[in-house]
Image 1 (spheres, rainbow, N blue to C red):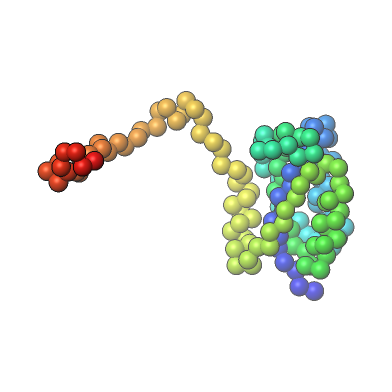
Image 2 (cartoon, rainbow, N blue to C red):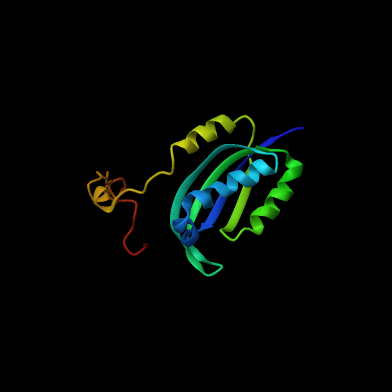
Length: 144
């Protein structure tokens, strides 16, 4: 049996997740293991406002999972996630075996936090004066 490693990104119902986070977050691992897979990493990624409503929800919780499974069983796993009410959407990406360890290690660190507005104001910006490199003799009046 040949197993592939997949990255699973789940968009969860935030309302259900807020009420029972342990139960909802454990569902993905339970389904993967019942289907014969092995979970390598499973963690909360973020909660965000959706670009467009999904099943009437404007916010969702993102959950990231890395797992090994026989490719023939991915269809069964997909079906299970499609009929689960707490999962609004999901996506699986097959990972190249050469980068699995690096990707999983990177995912353990978590998402990159956006810079706070007050920090952005204190960031030094290098400004190059516009026109400092233009030879004004080359531009003839009335040609621009």
